[in-house]
Image (cartoon, rainbow, N blue to C red; front, side, top):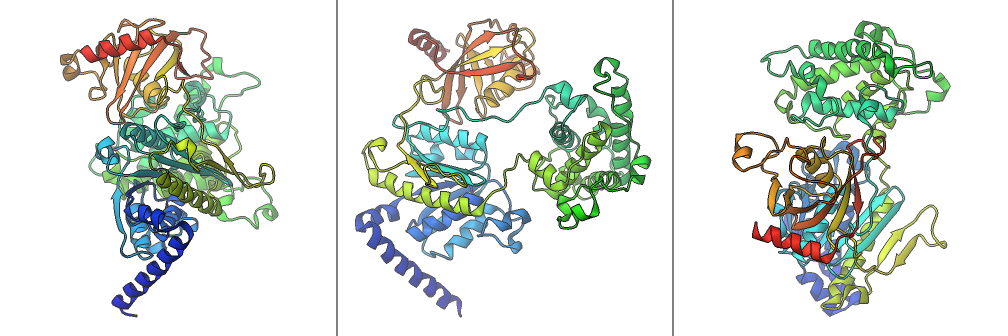
Length: 571
């Protein structure tokens, strides 16, 4: 078939598809579909299905943003991609693929992070509706705030294994994404990760921090920052032997450092014995299996088998050697990804070797990757159902015109399987009103308990609490109309001092006390809120190792809020 014939064939299919859609929803609704300008955020599991649905429904003006490139592991559930597409941007390949369904569609692909400045409120304002297909909590928060700031309706969706949900968000009319608290990633105490791990997840957290320390950018908050000198001493050398570097790092981490940890007598008791050092030579000789019988492993994939200690030792050195030989230019800017083979090899082997030090049962690569990436396996059928529901809700949003969203046919729909509610896999519910206590779209006030105002530095507070807990991207903090933290000056220095900023000062040094009122501003997100501090020396360190706890809600009088806003406006 010639290219012209192929294009004609695709156009014939589009024409037939248009007729079918018109017959179902009518000419008027179809006209709205054809004129709508959409932004799709995410081109992964849900995004692939969603883009296909949108063009087959008749949407012809779409822009899609995605940060990721295609990995081999994506091919079993992201069906727009093929092996030849591996390492290419997801957004670009997805756009190419769906154009084959509808050649007349205008689909613009953006390979980038939706949190970049280029995708701010001005960019979002170009679209009639924003449709989310993200699996990242931080990014979903960010898009939620941009849509509120730009006053654009947002279709929000997600899936977790066999479970999924779709909802509609409209400023002032429905709950926003942050009106209800979302589960946050477990944070472990420093001493547990650094010195006294008890579970595989503690060792994997240590190994992920180790990867960032060895190959990522400088980060003083890294849990292993005390090892930075030893781990980075080879980076400045022009030529190095990757295997030699791997063995030196191995010797320091699993032998010398473990001996130091074992000497800290106050950490150990009869119930918790000190760790056992492991040299590379000794590890290389431990080629016995993990203890599982041959029959137990015979039907397993290689990734589901626990490797020998010798295999872990050789794998760790090989991963370090690969970073120094093939990725030398990326050292100092690499970020751990569960889908990157080299970084996952490093983290899996390092975690297993640390488990061997501390007599913790080691893991298969499959289990290590699941824990390290906090993975609940994606289910293609769930993604297909969710994307279909999102397309249906999009039609309801377009049909609403100026009608309040909660008075339309738009719904929140839950996908519940294999334990459906009332024997229904799909469970719709009415859209909820905004939460008046929501610090994003409601009262715009949050409370934070801080263990020590004297010890908590303003820069650490901004990063851990304002960015980590409140989800701000580049927040500025104000107190009594004065800026006390600017994201442009996160580190102490002459330029910061010239601006009257001291990122190294504690909250107390800035004059903050229990009951103090701060204002948070994030221009990029169009987000702002008030923050009330409360010092709580009894704050549980195990539950809150960072030293603070978010207590979302109102709790501040309107007079205080207005006064704070007035001070900030005059500053």
